[in-house]
Length: 356
Image (tube, rainbow, N blue to C red; front, top):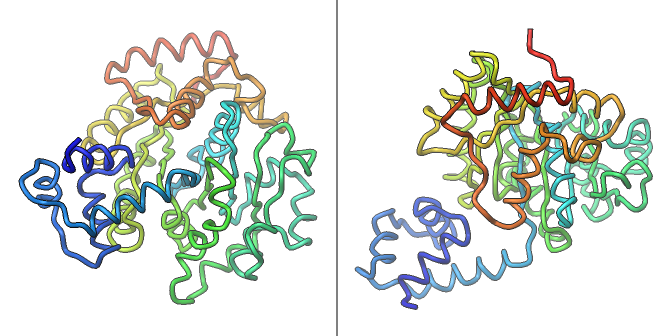
């Protein structure tokens, strides 16, 4: 294998575009390489500098045993962000991966779902993301292990819970504070295969912190026009984070949620998302609207655990199987009539309901 072939294969293995690699190298080496330089290296038209080879080898070695950090982020609430975080964490655990969920949302919805009233007890013990970020407690001491907490045993993954007091962090103006979570994760990154971050529904400091710490961001978006129009703003924020703070960050995809293929507006929004994000991000297989999720929430369980064979949870299962095997992620179909048929079958089988 030539050095050019090695460079191309290494870049693709790391999940980086030529632009991503350019940004990463310029940040790490204080250079000003452009995309065309990367292309010349990969096509044997120019020798690859030794420092570039060394940097990529170091990156491969670092990532080999390090957890993949996935942030779920959207500046709008009510789009299925926490539901997706929980189901992705559970689905990854079901395929045998070691998973940590970090609730970075001061609303603490994921923590309340998993711990109930016990969440306050853990907060009083000083075991939450608040105590790690604002009180400098070691992150290892803030983790609630699934085997130690009865309410987490069925979920099977570990948790760092949140609390409303975390909202204080958005007003903190300490230099470099946006890097705090990324730096703290270094000490536990080898203990897990996936770390899922449930970011808050805004574009404040906590969301920036999640994006700085993440390798991948997934953007849940409800298939309604106002929600879809906000995707461009978040993608613009991600691009700024990539340029200034985290050149390794990449967009895993836009994740449509509560999708009802029998509604024309849902189909139109999905089509708009596919067209408007082409070349910037892929649109993942939609999560259908289904009573499966409401029933699971009412029972205090996660849908992929409560109904693992239900058609409605299939997109989460397929997404996480692809993540675990490092395969291409399942994308939304351009033939939107297929989803309309699938949703009709889902509603008949699972008691789903149409959106009013």
